[in-house]
Image (cartoon, rainbow, N blue to C red; front, side, top):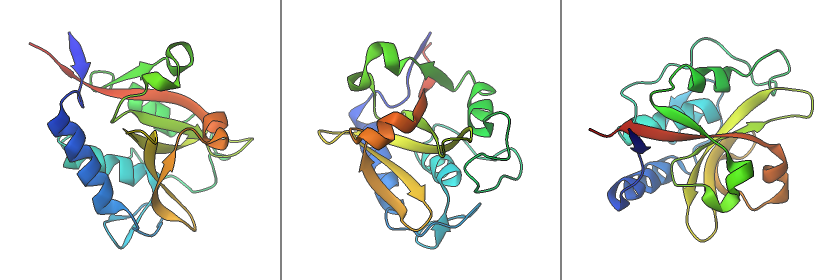
Length: 164
C-alpha cells in the first residue's frame, strides 16, 4: 500500500523550506546550484532530494530548453513513469484542482507545439502556490489558479512511499 510522501506537516514544512532555499535563484539550463543557477527539471530533483523522497537525481540524459519542440515524447513524463514506485499519476481533471496536494509534480506543456517539457512542484496553501524555474524569471512561486498555468497543465504526479 502507498501513501503520499508529503502527508505529514513536518514533511510539508520541509518542502516549503526547501523551495524557499531556491527562491530567487536565476535560471540556468541544466544547472543545479542554489542562488547561482537552476532549470525547472533540476529544481524539482533538488527539492525532492532535499526532502528525502529520492536519494539522488539524474535527468536521464541531455535535454534542451526549446519547450520540447525537439521531442516526440516527454522526457519528464517518461522519467516519472519509469519510477512508478515513487510517483503515482494523479487524475486532477476528474478529482478537480482542489485535490492537488503539497509535493505534487505539475507537468506543463511549455509551448503550443511541444511536448510536456516543464515541471513545477505544488506547495499548496491558501494561494494554491507552486514553485518553478523559468528563463528570464528564475525560481519563483506562482499560483496554479492562474488561467495560463491551468491551460498548460498536462499531468500531475504525486510522490508516494510504501506503507508497511
